[in-house]
Image 1 (cartoon, rainbow, N blue to C red):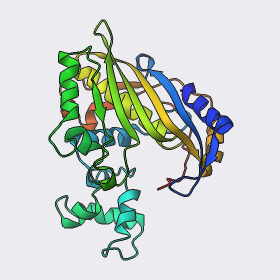
Image 2: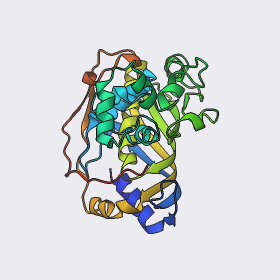
Image 3: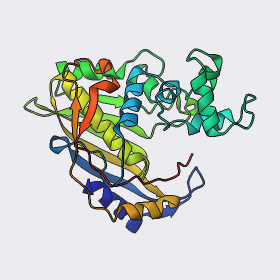
Image 4: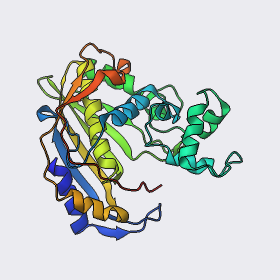
Length: 295
């Protein structure tokens, strides 16, 4: 994963300091690409401690077409909580609850309760666009699977989360916005390229790399291929100014060998994967590094 550390170094050395929507401030470069060979191991970051379970749970949540944090909260996955909490604080139901208390409220209510429907909703984010684009019944994931199996050399193996008609209704417009998949000439391998419009390099990018490498492996299995390469193309690649110290600490660490991804080989449908079907082996890493989320 030296590619990731090189990205961090490049931003710190060559980026420009910019104001941003969150008010935190970033150092940013525009246009950067890294490539990860999935045949020589799974690209889960080793220079800081990471956990595959929340990454996999979020991906399964996307694939379900779900857009409410209830599924994630019930599984103690916290990555989407800040955005609905900010909206909750503007509502009449807010009575000074902390983020943690808000999460407990979501946990304590049933999924079909009015509280969860209103305050757990993120709008038509990734899952909605993947499985029901623009609310028009277009299932991009099913169409992708069908295309990879029946027309492998098509140049239209696309999944797009960016929908201009719905952006204003989303809690957070898609950062990882556009996916394209590519089958090798011998019909043996499947590769994926992600275009990410905006990338929080310390907190988000390690998560994104692992998520789309996992998705590529899952698709490869159900479509009859082997996962080959994940190509990560970033528009605005930035490090938040309050992450500079922790990124510099990470840069002192030498990457350890990659772990191995193990999927349940019995799963033949992309929508049938559960968290128990996804495991990693031989994962070694340095200790945890913490940075604040800018909302």
